[in-house]
Image 1: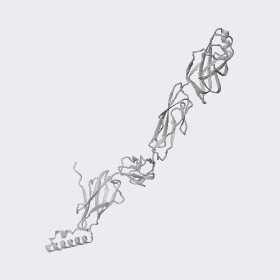
Image 2 (image 1 turned 135 degrees about the horizontal axis):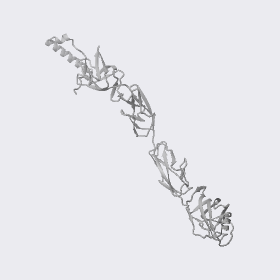
Image 3 (image 1 turned 135 degrees about the vertical axis):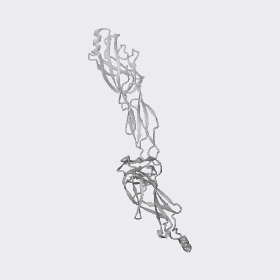
Image 4 (image 1 turned 30 degrees about the vertical axis):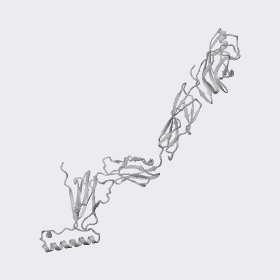
Length: 443
């Protein structure tokens, strides 16, 4: 497609009348005029003035301002233009204003006044030129409807020192093509370029003003050293139920402004964590269990501690018979794989399943029983009693002073006959140690 014809207006500093152009100057007059011009040029040079040519040219477009690399004007809007040169020309030089796309942005001159007018949506270049030495300057214009609002910006933003962040404003309505300008209230704290890219420089606060047309919006900026990482002395720990572990978290860099951290467990029934980072293992499962404690900094970076809660207190039937005091009955005790320290209680499930005679079986089910325990050394100790109350099975809660236990046995409180044969079932459904309830596992 052929390029649009350009619109060019020329402003001569002096323009001789038409009648003068048609006359034939006498040779003597021509020589005199040339001498006068040379004299004026010489006088101008003597006083450091250039009254003939412009070294630089520019233009003022009323209240329209340059935003980034563009100037916006609405369709149908007209603006007066003032053409300028440096130094100011006196004569023998002309300044012209040219539109690259008159169908988008037209240039008009009426009664010695130059104006520009947005015609339709699009882009065009306006060029100011000097006829002498080819001094010129070009302005990029955008013809568009002005925006009604600016969206997509945060009200406030925290930046790290040396951090780069790009603002992404959105003009409404979306078809507005007005340029968007950015300005920082304090470039020493945070700077912003024409693309809206922020860079934090020093600790402090500043305001970024985003503008387009007559619409402005401010973003409050707080620049300080942010936490980049959280480190832990241990990546994982192994705990028994009731044991504790203090998390000693450190943030990097050391000069971060806010060094506070928070703690969160993914399963408080397995491992709890306090606001100060104290982890306490609890019993929730019959086997080893993994829990994850997340340590999060105020600025976002985090670290994770893996907590393995072990269950060492499994119990299983012993081979028996065991020499439990005050009885000659064959008893099958429950033996803990690992001795339970600081044990203060047991929940015992006990049932009489068979005896040498039905009468003896009835006697056992209506009788009373003693609970005996022994540690890894020493002798058996009676820690409590319970009554079956005619039941085939009995659950009894037994409490006692803290001690280490490795085996548990249950026998009738009084013997009815030496060597009497009977069978029983014994199970430990719960233990209490260090103030913590626990399930030692199936038997």
